[in-house]
Length: 628
Image (tube, rainbow, N blue to C red):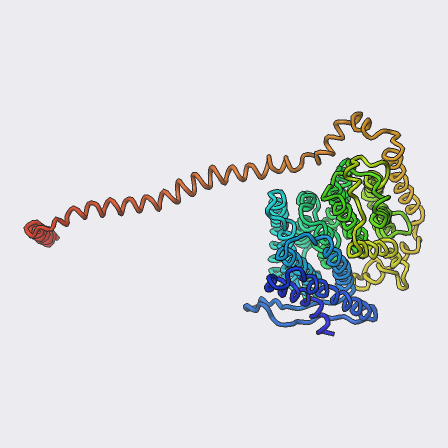
């Protein structure tokens, strides 16, 4: 079993190494290495899921990585209910994204094609390290690794300035959050004497409430960066500059889910910090509403989905924030299917329309792209929370837990956001696939994509339709399975899964809100009553605020980036570096030069002059001796 676990983690690294080192050889055949490097771990992970369901756990040290005095950190891996769910999610979704990439990236030059699959394999490797690590420091290695790979893949087309800037923005924004994560690790080791999960959690009760609150808030700071929550969400919309399969991988199977997983893994610490739990839930629900509001008016196909991801991540944080850790992970699981699907569908539309992303130029594409259109609609129904599609089960479980735990404000805002979600995603569907084509030339060139791209969409559409039914599995369903290591909420999870505990009324409200959102989108963008253009003019101030994303990027530039650049240029560079540091160094050089120039004049080359110098020296020495 140990060998299988190691194989799951390291086979993607081997695939990345082969394509990375021998890219000049693999070239257009790079996918023959890259796809099996993910598909084999996916098959193994399903076997491991069965073993864990039967009660098997693994927590072992491969070797001791750092051993300095009392500070000991291993390379060790952990397999339990939580990590195996993440393992299956990451490998399964990533496998189909890799397959889809074969068709999507077909136009890339040979070496660039191999470089792409190298980065993709490396991305999955670091994510597997993150979710399988048995200690915080090794988790942090995976945490930083996915950050590095996101930088490489978002800026994959580095010749484009916008792509290079987007990669840099993602990298720097995440460094802000990671600073908090790093400080939290120092505090954990200082006060608990270890970074290994089972040691930390066994001694967690020794922490005072203020200290536990500080540590968990710092960990959450890291999560806001990695999982794009307020105020560090700004990198994710710009991450759309990378290839669309990369967007699917980041949004569905890797990176952005890391923060949710980290909090769920650290649930023992978070249970000691009620204030932090409130912060997580409130930040999550505000982020969900905030991102959804920006998606209402955006016309960029991929950016609507990016804001959608930020919003859905907010729901996941609501789940873990109200103590329903398993519900948050359940939504992570279902979201991986329908968000991965929708990004692949968006890529299919782009591929057919020569890279066009503006939905206002589309329309009527369902006639020419039936598979893409139907699978996209399945994903839209899932994210809208329409039963029995996957998103209904997980989103409603989170809202149910929020309500029964007394977080009425969180439940209310989350329910309103669900209606907004249904509206903006079906606005996208209606503008893209229904009505009359708004750009005839673009429409004429539209076509369905080859099976290597459509088959992954069909598979993920099936998952988007039925993955939520795991809520009804024996033993408390999905949440009951995960709660076997959470030691909390099992009965609530069972009741929620079966519609007990007052959940029926909440479900009716949630479904009604989703259907209202879809209905309004239908009236505005199919029936044109009311006309969306007239609505935009009537509520122009609100429209401008949403369209310009609340000018958050501009505010960041005005209050943080421009002052930092100004201080760096005019104070640190011109005054400190050039004026003080260079001034001291250059001053010493000039002083030595002046002294040298003076001493050089004494070297005349005439013996009588040297004789006079010797005589003068003797007189000075004798005078000093007489005086002292």
